[in-house]
Length: 413
Image (tube, rainbow, N blue to C red; front, side, top):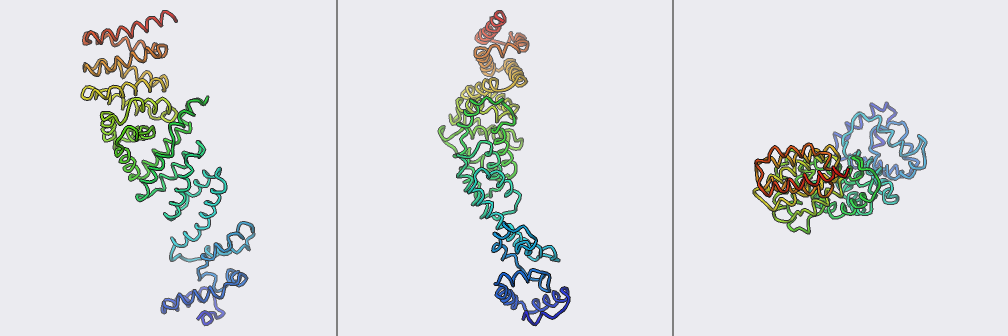
């Protein structure tokens, strides 16, 4: 059939005649392609077919591309067979199966990048950056995610943000649970926080931990099902031992998202009441991971205020509310320290006995542990005297303990 259609005519006319012939007899298409492949098994014949000819614009050749991939690596000339195949695509009027064509073109690239990542782990980040800009089949993505998930524990701290971002943005509803479980198990925030505490690096919003938490937040925002799945995975934790530092950090991130703020607050309160989230876990999350939380102090103060107000109904919340304030004061800068002192003064003036007691105890703890840092804000603390008529005997004694420590410090300065 092919011979019958090869008269010495213009390529456009030949293409039209070939199209008419194949459309009128669809059963000949497979035979045509099969015969063509058989007649081009010889690489020299195949190269001739790629050169300008009456067949150049009419037959699929991308399925032969992987055969010449090695040649593409070592031959930079325009006569390279792989480049000749790609060159033909420039002159196509239309593409009947664009997704299949894209898959054929990307397949060797993906294979090469995966091999490169396996051979040179230090190139993981640039490889993932390249893969994130390609449209890949789910099978390829699953394989890549499994590979980098296995390496998560040994990955360089500076690479973790890119790895987490790639996994969360390429995950599917069918694999999201396993990916989240893998991240929770293999991303050791406890060790990471201690290493950064020992580092002489200045606390910065550009610290590796800050980038990691930002990648998690972007992943939660990128796909709603990721946000829902991670939230549900934390809710499903039933014992104190199951809760990790990463769970507290993710709850803080979720609390910063307006759409689910109330739901997250309810879950945090419930877990504290049930003893699943403890004051020591919150302290570890805030104190040892202040680098990563540098962009969440407003969120943390908002949560602390809400928890402290809840102490009237649930007294078991007070230790966590207290430690959230004291840990934040210890870890943050002068601006937010002033905000913390101001919030405590507001709580003391609320007129709610339990809330006032807890706020005074927190302020006393801050003065006892770091009076020099608190004395800077003594002008705000003196404002509590305006509420003196509303304080009971216990609260007045606590307040004068605070003033005594501040006064003694002033006298020594």
